[in-house]
Image 1 (cartoon, rainbow, N blue to C red):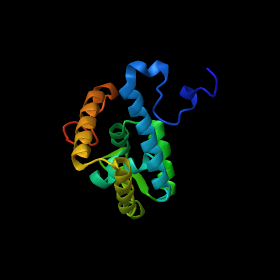
Image 2: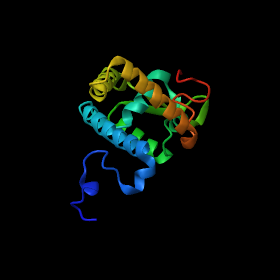
Image 3: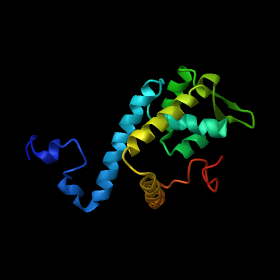
Image 4: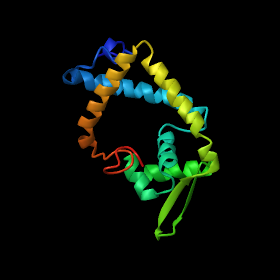
Length: 174
């Protein structure tokens, strides 16, 4: 194949690479997820955040101070990734880390006033991306898409060994 081959240069989900022929939906889902992350990254840049940092802040906004180990587990990221992310966010004044009074070996992470002030901007970024993402879909189609993606997510949870955003049995509510 040459660099001019449409399979190698297509800027969209199709034509699909031949190796992904048995995974049409998975290929499209990966493409959409990539574009969604790029779109969110552009919106977060205006707030001084990088993609993924807003998810950490959402966890802290919803649950308050949490142990760093619990944050790592709930985000499903590598400990070194979370540590680096926290270092950056602490330098920006968005989070504070301190010893856990109940266990001095553990570290608590909490949003600072500056971090709490990011919430409205992050909510706006997510709302804006939602509208952009779903433009042209009728309300019933949006509902059906959310339902279907929820089912796909449930199917993949076991693959990712995920428990949900706030731990086992929390049902997404902290």
